[in-house]
Image (cartoon, protein in one colour):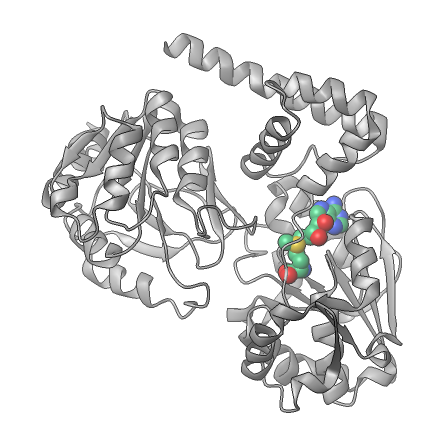
Length: 279
Length: 195
Ligand SMILES: C[S@@+](CC[C@H](N)C(=O)[O-])C[C@H]1O[C@@H](n2cnc3c(N)ncnc32)[C@H](O)[C@@H]1O
């Protein structure tokens, strides 16, 4: 029984490795350094979703059918997000980070792994209220162009607005949140003026390089999907993409503590995972 | 080395009291790491649960951070609004959509535990008013791990233990106060394992 189990385990590992290599060689997406536990769940999810029994079966279909690859890609990019997610984080940005940004004549922010755009619109609203939006350019990138498409539209589900209003208020927002959008069917369309300084682009943190230097990089709940080695590489990329004394903001439960890059940063708001480069 | 590599506990309604009883009775030198998925509100981010548990037990209890290492005697609790998964030796978090209306979901945790720890895994299902954890416990048992279920008669809510027993009839059924001694029997203490 145990012999069989271990055998299965080893075989599954082979199947996962081969599948990821096939995806990388055929489509260029490199998932090999992703955290295995989640990745494995997503791969099996797609396998069953395709009516298949084995990961090898999924490999065959993915190789021969780009539409299947699209479906897998959608499964692998977990787009779950919300406006002013973790209000205390957004409050800390406003109270502790924006005053530092104010010292620059022109501000560049990178929202890496922006998903469907709720986060970048949250940033833009707070920047506007603090009088910084006019001189800020926010670059929003994600691996998933379907998500980017929705981010570009600036429309979010109307039924989420009650929750977002609460988040906004807890994050230190003082205006009427409803003044930022107009209801149109089941969507809330956000004020296009908020998007004036936004740039959307597909960018893969694993395979694409640095493309600018930023005073603030916000990358939340993306690194959790990466294994330690890949996290290390992406933190290196962020380091290369920051101005002197740049600021890095991660998700509530992410950390740089175990990284060799840890020494390059000092905590700015430790409890919110906001760090500042020492040089 | 202990035959038990990891103890995973799932709890829902009534879980705080049940967890206090179980964790509070584990010895300071308990030889296995412990991971916990307790259902709670997504915005319960002030750390109350972890503080209460930490105050009541000899082991160190904290909220799991991504890629944090699993050390013997360390109790890692899934943060609200995140799934907790394990890989051999460390945890991994995810914000995948809720499963069984829950994030953290016990099934997500247990599924990863079954895969990463096989026969060295122990899964425990405590009180709760839903069926989360049933599937995951069956996966742990199916890979040769040990399945323990709180006796539904002694549970604040019996639905979750009952669902777990339905999915894993061979699970050991224990009264709440018997669970800690059973876990200590399985995992041992570090003093024993040093001998
Ligand atoms: C859970 S969402 C996080 C959204 C938002 N930052 C938040 O915290 O609410 C994770 C996002 O990371 C993106 N992602 C995953 N792998 C990526 C990669 N290699 N490069 C860029 N984005 C990636 C996914 O497409 C997804 O939109």
